[in-house]
Each structure stands twice: as C-alpha cells, then as structure tokens.
Amino acid sequence: MSVCEGIIQVLEDQAISQNYTKIKTVWLEIGPLAMIENDSLRFCFDAVTRNTLAEGAQLEIIELAGQAWCLQCAQTVEIKKRYDACTACGSYQLQVTQGEELRIKELEVE
Image (tube, rainbow, N blue to C red; front, top):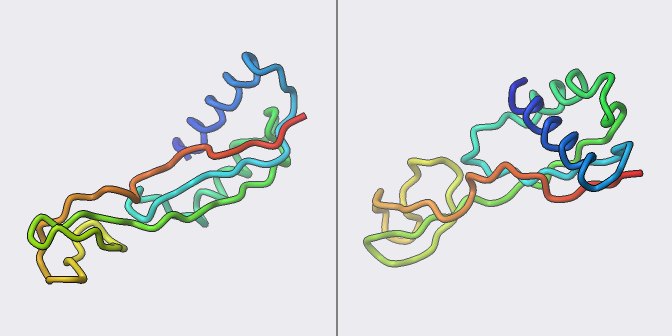
C-alpha cells in the first residue's frame, strides 16, 4: 500500500509542475528483484487512487528481466531471484545490474 501511496504522491507533484488534471494510464517498469507482487500492487493502486487525479486510471506493468554480471566468468546472465547461480558457470558471485527497478515509465494524462 505504501508503494502505491508513494507513486500517487509523485504523480500529484508532477501534476502541479506539468499542468495536468487527470491521469488516464500509468505505465510502471518493475524488475523481478524489486520485491513487488504485481497483483497486490494492482489491488492497492485501485484503492489508493480513489478521490485522486488518478481515480479510474489503468495501471500497465512492464516486467523487466533481472540481469547480473558474474565475477567468476565475466558474463552477463539473466537471473530471476537475487541469489540465483550464474547460468554460465554456476558461481554465486553475481553483481546485480538490472531488475531492481520500480519506476514510472510513462503517463497518459489530460
């Protein structure tokens, strides 16, 4: 719920500076390592947007892939969880490079 409240606060702040009064669609980019449950986010978004400029807005989620750089074999590999092993060499010495994102990608406004 607090994640959605933070998103609404950002949207309301931007509405003032960008001069829009209604949000029709919000696109969020979410990585698998952001620890966000998409179904819960959708439910909370509907609840939190009541009586705001985003009431009735559609929430579109763009799921990003998780990636990490392996310190052992120097390969960039896809990961689904933070403690996955390298798919190339099996090492667990990975540095996450993508997948922790939770950001507002795009808005459709009036």
